[in-house]
Length: 406
Ligand code: PLP
Image (spheres, rainbow, N blue to C red):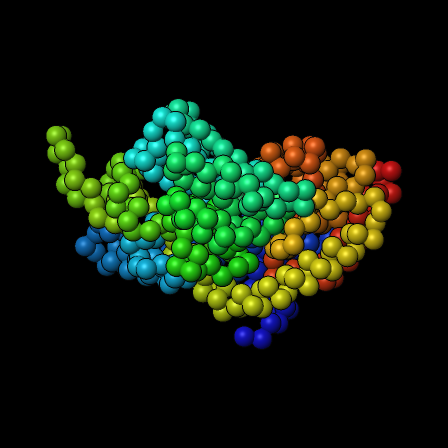
């Protein structure tokens, strides 16, 4: 498909509005992405025409929504190149997917003294569930350090692995620095010791095509809302062999085959892990979001986002008083920076008044901020629908911020 930025921007109604009488410049895509009209239409269509509980009804609407829900599962399996749709579990989001694995894998496979390895570059969502498991089981949590340029120090991984290591959980892309981690190498090292690997793909999925078979990861998690789909829906990919062995995460309707007061027989995969009524409308809209992304094409996405990343980086570096935090050799379109002596929050508030949406603070990665000895940063994060003109507006506003705060 030809990349026509004007036409693409028209697909996203939220981009075409003013805030404080200024055109919105939305540079907070790592927090959540805006939604194309096809995704909004899918939600509207679901609630105006299809709304019904899935898997349970004999009636027309229930059959329609069950079909659309299960078609999404098939398409997500194709999207990730999973072996089959039994390996795709719908969740509330990436956080929910990680908690599912920490809880369920943990229940079965982690005992006192066992070790879990994460990295110092993780989002809190890939730290806290493992801490809860550690405390529950008297296990040990080990952390792979990062290097000064903001990369996971893979060479330290071998030193951390012991016969007690039971799982490694690592992000594909860092949400605070944009680092693209060499997860293929990490998975290879882990598998040479027979250790399974969970990948937190929240920040990779909108930018990088993911092939779980090629990666050979054991678990891959992402949220719909980071890839132009609605909030409240997420995906857990897991190798079937793990899902077969893991106990259910939650109990309730749908995840059962037969219930008596003595015993419950659980449903088959993937339903064993989907207790209760799911966000069917959200899942069905996720299908539209994935189709939209594939239609634009990851090559086009990378091309546009790399131009934006390169241009904004060069322009920011023209300022002696601006420091970019994290300079990894491979990164997505995220830039974290600080302006000398200016608090990130003040910078964010002033940029907001110029219509520019950025994220400020620790970005749910307090250990990363501790490493750099910073209370927080200003983070801009581009999507393919951002433009070079928006970078000019940002640079103009940064000059104003500096005048006002210095
Ligand atoms: N992991 C990373 C790297 C993230 O950036 C985020 C969200 O920002 C999450 C996990 C959690 O995603 P969610 O809040 O959608 O569950």
